[in-house]
Each structure stands twice: as structure tokens, then as C-alpha cells.
Image: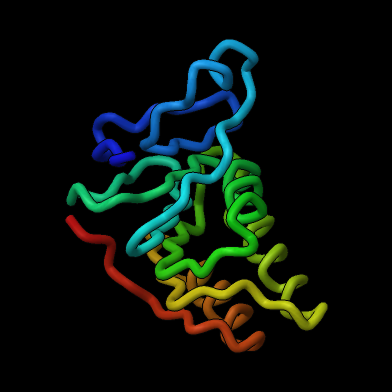
Length: 147
């Protein structure tokens, strides 16, 4: 199944934009579709506003709660890229997602992530996220979001 591009992402009630159409049963019953079998790179973006400008497959969460749900859903898979924005609108921040990653590492089972890109217009917040993730040996770097 091909993924839709950023413009076609379908937002669900839990704030996750899969870029993948749900099956008829999932739509009818209001259930989230199961994770698709991925072939190739897996990218997750947790950002309240941005979408990737390219058409490569990506899973998008618009809130921290949706980001936690998405990471839990893909817990057993290697994630090539995880993109994190610090400020997610209103009082929401990326910290519930960071705490999930931190807890997994503390428990001896860190998430299998190739690289964590932290992009934010909040330099102190981004620095704190980087410091926390690096403390737990995640490959995290400050990145300018692609325009």
C-alpha cells in the first residue's frame, strides 16, 4: 500500500496522521488501523504544524499524546528517523514523548531509532530535549526542518 503525501494525510481522532487509508472495517468501527508492514525507511514526525515537503512516507502526530500513541504502536519496529518539535501548540510540548523514550532506555529497552532530529523555534527547549535523549544514548541532533 502506498502512503499519501503530506497534503493527503488523513487526521484521525487521536491526532495521528497516517498517510495511509484505513480499511473499511476500521473506518466503520472507528478503530485505528494496524501498523502497515513497512518496506524501506520509517519516519515519524511529531509536530503541530509542519509536514515534510517531500513525498517520502511519513507518520505524523500533531500532539504529544498522539506521538506517544504512535511510538507505542511502532514499538517493535526500527525507526529510521524520529522528528520532534518542542512546542506543540497551547500548553502541549514534546515532553511526554521524551519521557516515553527516556523510560524505555531506563528500563533497559530503548527504542530502536536511527536518528532523532530535534527541530524547534525554542532553543532552550530543544537543548533540554537533546541533553535528555543523549544522556540515554539516543542518536539525537539539532536539525533545521526541511523547507
